Image (cartoon, rainbow, N blue to C red):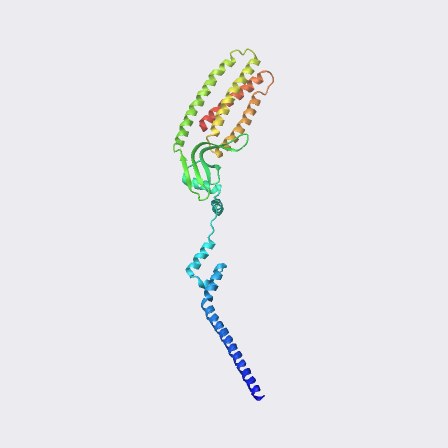
Amino acid sequence: MLFLRQKENKAGVIFMKRNIIILCCVLLVLSGAIIFGYFVGKIHSPNVTTSTEKFSGKIKKKDIPEEQINTIAENQEQVVLPEEEQNLQNNQQKTVISRGDAKQIVSSDYQSDGHIVVMSEDDNSYTIGCFWEMYFDEETGEPRFNMQAAEYVIDKYNGKILSVKKQENNTTNTTEQQKDMYFDYYQRYQEIESNVEYLYDNAYSTADLVEAGENELNEWDNLLNEVYNYIKQTISSKEFEKLRESERNWINERDKNAEEAANFDGSAAALEYNGSMISQTKERIIWLIENYI
């Protein structure tokens, strides 16, 4: 019995040792695997992290050279707009000069007497005219301009003179034209004076004489108005204001004198009235020609 017990104890010891050896081998394998995995992960983990981050669109600043980072930032800030939007943005950034400033630019370049007027404008420029003469429309009271001496096109944004057309001989032309009109109106005056005589050829009664006088007065009135309208186109606005005031005063004085001349009863009053009106109108025509033409 003792021998059997000893044999059983010996077999149990051997079994236990075998289990311990197997357990140690398993632990050894696991330890080796852990150690191997640790070193492999430490070697390859930076590349894996960088690749993952790149793939996800996140790049660490420390992994990219500084020059490359600056280039990327510049490319991200630079936005290319369509051509129309760029033009609109450029125009919005520009400052449009005023009409007054544009006229001042023309005045500095033109350096001559006359009237400077903005005739038209578009999105990019002003068209400005220089005129020798200005007068006022009798019906509307608005200023009118004659005898253009120059035409400028001014850039609305930078004030540059884009083009200019000048007529240097306008002063000479004006003087020559006035001389021609001076002699022309004197000739017309003499023609009317000669031709109105036929109006009285068949006037046998006072009524006929009155009618002939009215017709003659119409002839002189037409010439007076023609001379007056010509003059107002050839003088400055200040001169025309003086002339218009003078003309109004003269009309009042003419009518007053004519009424005084006809201040009596009878059919002869109309003859005296027409005669006074005719003589004063003729004198006014001569006065206008001599003083303004």
